[in-house]
Structures are given as structure tokens and as C-alpha cells.
Image 1 (spheres, rainbow, N blue to C red):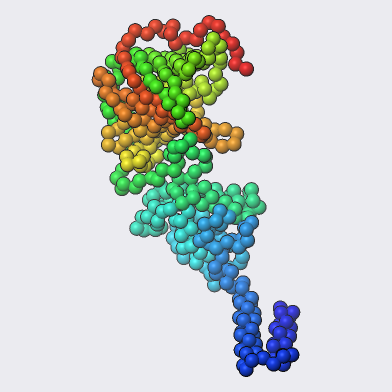
Image 2 (tube, helix red, strand yellow):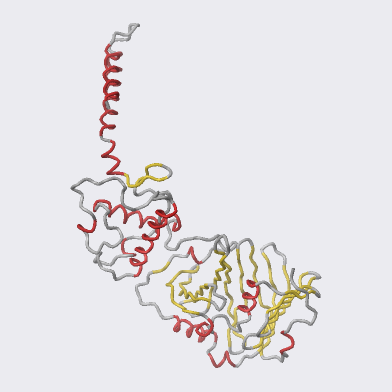
Length: 419
């Protein structure tokens, strides 16, 4: 500070010296006054810099000081490391029911709330009812857990530097987007939740409505076999013809013909297998899970028996259709999400989550063009998508209750181990 004062005194003396050339009338005096004014303003700003920073900024990260309401990923809404003025009361002494933001100066609470609202693209009503201190909304409980998570993550992984915030994952949306989209189709994680204000039905109620929409339990039970012909069109416009055979409760054979190549995959109730030409192979664990999943005679109707802990995740909008989202764990341990049309009860979308060493990948099926065949409805169009690829399967013909022997679903005798 002494060096700065000396610099200012030297600058003033230099400004008052007579110039080595004759300036225009009053020009030199005007320049001197302006320069001195600027220097003095800078001096007072430097003296008050600490106070300005403590009032306007909250954190210091890898990119320097960050404004509290900044949307850059290195920001946060956690307490300032700098010591607050002695007169500043902590939030818990000013507001009721403060749980995880204890110790944060009360004056920073509103800024923290504003940041979280912007990070998730919501307003106060998403977490709070009319009485802000009440814990009557699930979103408020979840937000507390998320705040704890980010605080712990920054402390354990970044040495206390505030690098991870709500916006790191949420990006202005309620649901975070941790994985790449499934091909050209947006994943369910990018779907905004709908707050209709009415109580959500249970998972059992949604499944029962779905079964009724397909035709009812009696009608579904009356169909024991299906013989289906279909055309699969890939994203690159290539296509293949499909012959699909099903036998209740879970036998499956799919024969795919593309140009001169024929491939098969099946499930005989116990074993999943695949073949290409004459070569029979043992599929990997992910392929086995997919084949067994596809062997379900009607997707999702046996959710209560086959899946663990089905719960209703909320209401979303698929295009113009409001839908209920049901989350459950499949028999192979993979989490799945099912989206049922609120109006007619039909299954619109199914999302399967596969965990990899680098993160999670989504496989998504969109069901459309439900057509009545006999007493039941079947989706005549199924669009599959996963990162980097997509295809649409369109049914061209269906036969019900045709005679199909169990031997049809067994793998051929010749078997070559998969390399």
C-alpha cells in the first residue's frame, strides 16, 4: 500500500510539470485533471476491492472468481470460504428449517436459490409450497441430497475447489443428462416432468390400464402363439425381412434375411442363442439379456412378476402425448423405464440402461401404430435406437394361434463357440 501511495504522489508531480512543448490552450490542464481523476478512482476501487468481492462473488475455482449466479460449470452455491463480517448472521439463525446450508451467510441464501432455479430451469414452486419452511415436497428432499453430493464430491475429488455444481449435469433441465442420446432420438432423460397437480396412479394401476388397452387379460391369454412377418429399415436405408415366432410364455425365434445372408436368434425358455449361416454362437451377456427381454410375449404386462420395485417416476410429455413414466429393475439387473400414454394406457416407449466402464448407454424402443388383431392390439411399428444406430421394424402380417413345435426354438445341433 505504501508503494501505491508513493506512485500516486509521483504521478501527481509529473502531471503538474510544465510540458516540453506548448500545448493548445487549456488542453494540458484538461488531460491532467482527467488522468488524475482516473488514477484516484482506481485507487479507491483497489481499497474497496475486498468488500466488493465479498458482496458480489461467492467462490474461487479453476477459472478464478465466479459470480454466484453465473451458469459456468465451475460455479456453486456453497458457503464462501472467506470470513463473513461479524454482523452477518448464518442462514439457520434467520430462516427456519435450514438443514444442509448451515453456516452460509443469510444474505447468500437467495442467491443460492436463484442459482439452483436457473440450473434446473424451474421456479420456487418446484421445491416449495406456499410455506417455504415446510418439507411437503419430494423435490425439496431430493435437492438437499444433491447439495450434499456436490459438496462431498468437490471436497473429496477437487480439494474443496468448487468445480461441480447443479448445472454441471442438469444444464437447465430438471433431469440430468449423463449419457449420450440414443441415436437420433432424444433419451428420456431430456424429457421435462409435468406437474399436473393431481395424485399419480400406482405402478399396478398403470399396468392394469395397459393390459385393458391391449384387450384385457382374458383376450391376451387366448393367444398362445404368434407368427409375424416384418420389414426392418435401418438408418442407412438398408433393410431386411424378418420372420418372428413367439410361443407363450417366453419362447422366441427371429429369422432375419438381408441380401443373401440369413441370421437367427432364439430363446427356448432356458437358453438364448444366435447363428449366422451355419455357425452357431453363444451370445455375450448383454445379448442374452436382450434376447430374453424380447421373448416377452407382451412387453411389460408381467412387470410385477419379473421386475423389482416398479415405481412411478412422474409424468412426462412424449411429443404431444402426456405419459406416465414407470421405473423398474429388470431380471438382469438393468434399470428400465416404461412410458405409458395417459389417455389410452398403451406403452409408448421403453428405455433400457446398460452400464459400461465409461458410463451408461441407452437402448430405446418407441411403439406406435397399435392395430387390433383378433381380440388384442399389437404395435405394428417399433423404432429401436441406441448410440450411433437406429432401425424401425414394421409388421406386414400377423397370424395368431398357429401350430409351432417347441423344437423350432431350440438351437441347431452344430455349435461353434464364439471367439
